[in-house]
Length: 241
Image 1 (cartoon, one colour):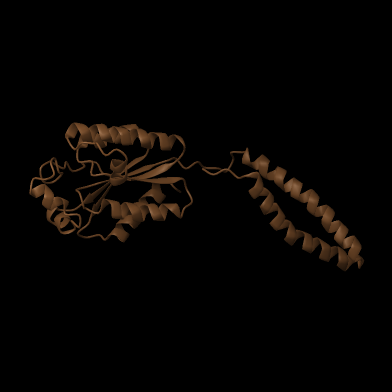
Image 2 (image 1 turned 120 degrees about the horizontal axis):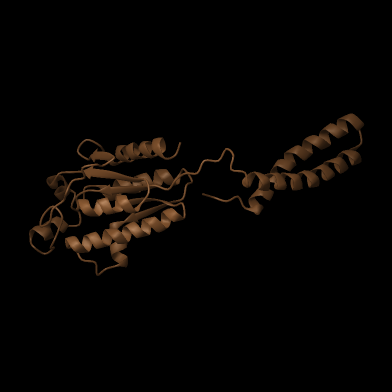
C-alpha cells in the first residue's frame, strides 16, 4: 500500500501543534496573566511535542497490530468484441481509484498497440494471454491490483490467467452478436463479414462462454453504470472490507 513519509508526518505534527500551542498559550495566560510566560511555554511545548509525535508515528508504523493488508486482485472482463467490456471496465477503474488503492488499468487495445505484430490465431491469442498473465503477476507482487478487459475467447486462456494470478474475478459481459454489430462504431464486424479480418471472434472464430464467471453482466438489461456498480460492490464485499 502506501508508506507514510517523514515529511507528511512532520506536516501533520506542525498543523496539530498550531491548534494545541494556541490552546496552551491561552490557558497559561489566563492562569498567570503573563504573555511572555505563556508564549515561552507554548514554544517549548511545541518543539518537544512535534519531536515526540514524529517518534510516536514511526514506532506505530512498525507495529502490525490493527493493520489489514489488502490483497491484490484482478478483475478480468471478457466478452464479444464491442460487447461493452472496456466501457464498464473504465467506469469500474474510476470508482476503485477513489478508494486510494494501488490499481492499474490494462486494455487489449493498448497492449496490441505496444506489440503490433500479434496475430489472432488460437495459438497467438493463448500465447498473448500468458504474457498478460505475467504482467499482472508482476504488478501483484508489488501489491498492485488490476482491471483488465480482453475478448479472451478461449476457455483455456482464461483458465491460464486464473491459474497465474491471485484473486481473479471473471466478469462475463454478455451481449448477443446483433447487439454488438449495432454498437460497431469501428466497422470491424462489417470488415470481418466481408472477409477483410480473419479469425474475428463471433464471425470467423468462436467465443467460448465462461462456465465459472464470478459475475455475469447482461448488457441488454444492465447499463454500464449499473454494471460497474455491481462489480464494485462485489470487490468491496470480498476484498476491501
